Length: 267
Image (cartoon, rainbow, N blue to C red; front, side):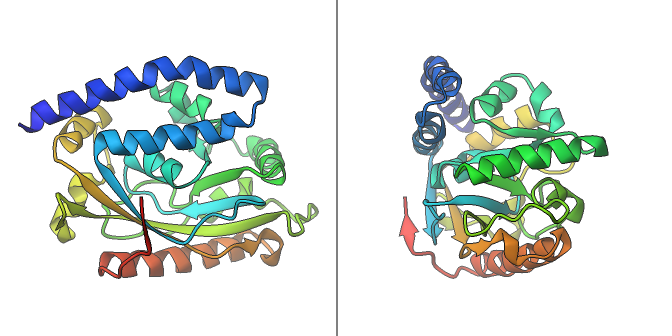
């Protein structure tokens, strides 16, 4: 039965996704406002296809650019976070080479960063800051990797260089930082527990295709999200201060989510 469910979910996903890709490409090339909002609608539908129920505490500030600093558990995070709000992602350069995934990432206006080339950080920082000043919501997975779903990996300060470069470019009140804590807590309405959460997580050297097949065959999932209040980016003197604040807040919120503290809004 799990294989049947995985097949039906994947077949429905591709049947729904492929015809919409040219439409999003048109929005992106025209510079339409729908280039931001259409992926949000699309991922909400994908959550329904996959069977993900979103339990959300807090919301992303709509009237300003927001750097969203999040923990990272699974490839499902992309769909879950995109269903919460219209967002783009800071992605590692390798993603731009993954079959099919790279097309979806480009259509969602992701920013690809080569972590091995320090000379690229400056240009990418300007690109991200320009996007934030234009009112975009940009997600940074600050751990630099994904976890097993039971813990938060220490944040990598260097990753914040692309979003909080050297002093000299004040953002004022136009750009804020918000933390986002994410955990997968239930399967078929039953608590996953410490042993169950790694079934959802995609980490280490797991093969993405085989993991996706197994995960989509499991059944409906609950994703709990807690969003911190907006804090002006200028409140942080440097990227170390920003990383320290974000890690403490995300880690604390993930612990509370895993302990079962209820969230406020279900989607």
